[in-house]
Length: 149
Image 1 (cartoon, one colour):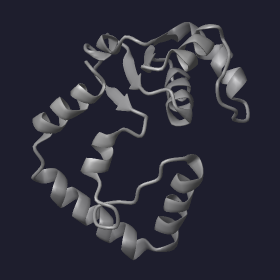
Image 2 (image 1 turned 120 degrees about the vertical axis):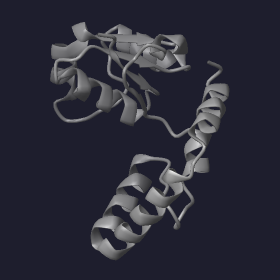
Image 3 (image 1 turned 90 degrees about the horizontal axis):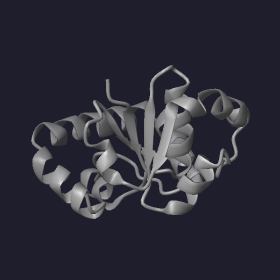
Image 4 (image 1 turned 60 degrees about the vertical axis):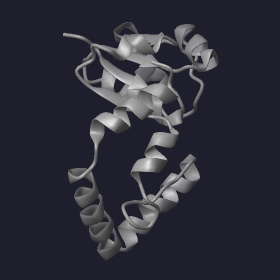
């Protein structure tokens, strides 16, 4: 079976891809920026999280790091783990979701949703309605154009 793919090696992508690999699956993690890819290939973590170094050491053999986006083509699951413009098109701030561009903003959005279950329910209902009517092939084409796939 083809590996699960993670597109984007921001903090979210690094932590998520290592976590996924810890479940026993092969992972291909891709970013257009060669810096995090090079560091990860050398066994260096570009982000800091408690115990991530040990988890990375245990899973590194199941992981491939690359800048070639075509490697995600055959993946049964592609996880987009980077703030790309397509997501800003999918999520309408305060109508279908909350947007955060860095860990502090994302944490703030999560805290807000936890404090306000009515808001979480309202945003979730609006997001589900929007998703049912969305033109996913058009969004996929826009995303692939953004990453030059």
